[in-house]
Structures are given as C-alpha cells and as structure tokens.
Length: 293
Ligand SMILES: Cc1cc2nc3c(=O)[nH]c(=O)nc-3n(C[C@H](O)[C@H](O)[C@H](O)COP(=O)(O)O)c2cc1C
Image (cartoon, rainbow, N blue to C red; front, side):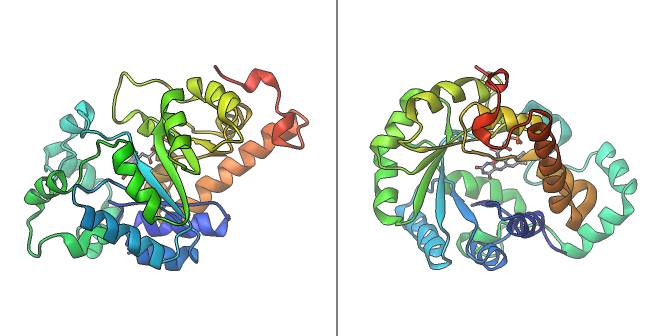
C-alpha cells in the first residue's frame, strides 16, 4: 500500500508544487526524491548528535533536494490533551471506541493489516534493530532536540549548499535572525496550532513581517489555511507561498490515492474563483480587505 507521504508527493509533483518531507515521515528521503524528480523539500528535525544531523543533510543533498527546511517550533513535545484522550500515542492504545471505529471501516482495516505498521522510513537505518514500538518514543526523545539557536543553525548553513528555510517563525525578531544567518526563506508557522494552544494565529504577524522584510528573504506561511479564500488572504497579506498540512491528510484519509490530487484540485478551483470574482489577474491585484492584521 502506498503511504500518505508518497501519495501527497506524487500529487504535489503532478501539480508542480513543493512537497515537504518530514524527518519523521513514512517514506524515505530517497523514495520521495525519486517520486518528485528531486523537486521535494526536506524538513529536518534537529538531532542531538552532529553525526546524525550531517548524515541526514548529506542524504538530502545526495538525493538532490533543492530546499532544506529547519523546524524551529518544537522545542519540546507538546501537551496535546485531545490526543491523550483519544489514545493517540506510541505505542497506540486500543480503546473500545478505536475498536468500534476500526470495525466500522473494514476496507481501511484490511488495507492497514496488509501494509503493516507504518515506519519512520528515513530514520530506519538509525533505529536499533528489534526496538519495540513502546521504546520508539524514548528513542525519539533521546535522538532529537528541537530547541534551536543561531549556534545550531550556523553549521547547517555552512554544510547545506541549497536553499535553506526556517519553519516556525512568528516574530520580527526571528525573521531578522534568519536574515542575519543568511537563510533563504521563512515559513511563518505555528505548526497548525498543534504545539501551543496559546500561540498566535500566523496570519496576524504575517502582513507586518512581509511589509518589513519582503525582498530580503522569501516569506511563506502555513497554519489554519483550509480554503481558496484563505490562500487569497495569505498571499494578499504578503506571503509568497501558502502551505497546508491537515487538509491534505483529510483528503488522503477520505479518498486514499486520489486524496492528494482531489484536495489540490479543490483548492485551485476555489482560489481561481476568488481571482475571477474579484477581477484579479495577478496576486498584486488582490484587494486590501483580504489583508489580515
Ligand atoms: C498529523 C500532523 C503531523 C505533523 N508533523 C510534522 C512534522 O513532522 N514536521 C513538521 O515540520 N510539521 C509537522 N506538522 C505541521 C505541519 O507541517 C504544518 O505546519 C501544519 O499542519 C499547518 O497547519 P494546518 O494543518 O492547519 O494546515 C504536522 C501536522 C500534522 C497535522
């Protein structure tokens, strides 16, 4: 069975948009490079050991990735009450409700049984053989440290010759640091609100960051974008690209292999409709009422 990462990478490639593969994605750096002909981006969770960091960066370079994304908004793993309540954990908890839901989706259950347990394919070479799923969480905690600073970013900038993007920026201060470090872009992101309930909505700081720093660094945004009008607001507010997370996962969850293409097609149609309704030929024509501050 094709995993969600592969389905979405294929759809992104077909629509000529970037797919960002996570370090903890269910497909490997090499598989996604092959699917996207080297057009994918790779997102690095920051390893504690320099050796692992360098090895992941070297693999992405060898697979001819054009863009490396460093994640800055997971200094610690979040407290996600909803996930605790639903038993979404490593190892997964089988609750009565989960069992009922599985029985209600026999097709999914059979496909999942055939495919076997999802794996962190990129990390497979570094995970000790025979490590039980209950120890995987401990391994992840021991291996990665999300807390970033300039000292940790500098060696990555030196090693990575392609474009380097910082994801998880929401302030002018961090945008200035990214520029000073010689980074090529930022993704204004709050991780889709999954890290901190008290975080700021990304559309709010976007316009100010874009007004001040456009031209000095590429500015992109994600978090909370669900529709074509949301994309229009994001672009009108100064982002040069809008990324989405959950909408694509929903598409794949509902429609499997067709989910990626389906979601992108809906978004394209909705966005085109905004442009037509507002008589806009170019992004620069989008009216001011779409700029959110
Ligand atoms: C299930 C799930 C897993 C995620 N895993 C990662 C990850 O491994 N690395 C990462 O940089 N962001 C991860 N994110 C955050 C997304 O990259 C993105 O920032 C966020 O989903 C955007 O918000 P949206 O879901 O509202 O579109 C994840 C999001 C979800 C929903």
